[in-house]
Picture 1 (tube, helix red, strand yellow):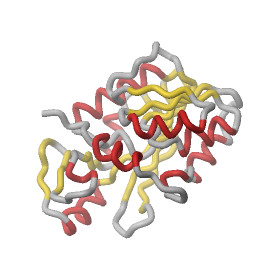
Picture 2 (cartoon, rainbow, N blue to C red; picture 1 turned 120 degrees about the vertical axis):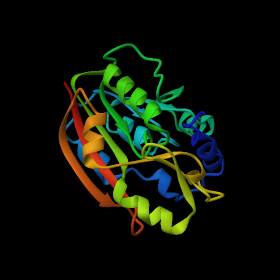
Picture 3 (cartoon, rainbow, N blue to C red; picture 1 turned 30 degrees about the vertical axis):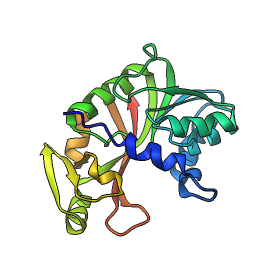
Picture 4 (cartoon, one colour; picture 1 turned 90 degrees about the horizontal axis):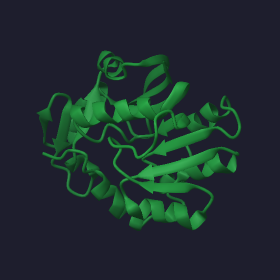
Length: 214
């Protein structure tokens, strides 16, 4: 069973993106992270969407590659220009070992089961240079009861859930984890920062993590 299918939903979302969408505004966490990076550093934005982070980072003087499985989002980035775009799956990155100084993946890699997730993390580790940083988010197990209260759902494999929520990406597998799960998944990394916090909606718990490749 293929589980990394959420790009089907997001491709439709990117095709109808409207001015002022929150998906066009870079996150403050990303801006803060970028202040500690060397100018000109090569950054991979893995799951770049319509480029809210890739385009901002490029504007700050970084050498950015935007990768996504959804072509509509990459098309929006190409319209803006200044960023190399690559259409590919997150668990099979078409780059040489140690190609990037840093990797960003915001609200992306938890779209799938544990097998997809482990392969994706392995690929992130492979393409990162030693001592390079990874900034990302994961879904917290604390969020799961809130989703279960809203939609009927079922666990398709360990920590991976789908929900009866037509019109949302929750019909596609999502992975929810504890801190212990998360640290075990990211072998080969040193944890620099880990915080579980809500996003804009009550119950929308996400892990925010900054890691360094060993």
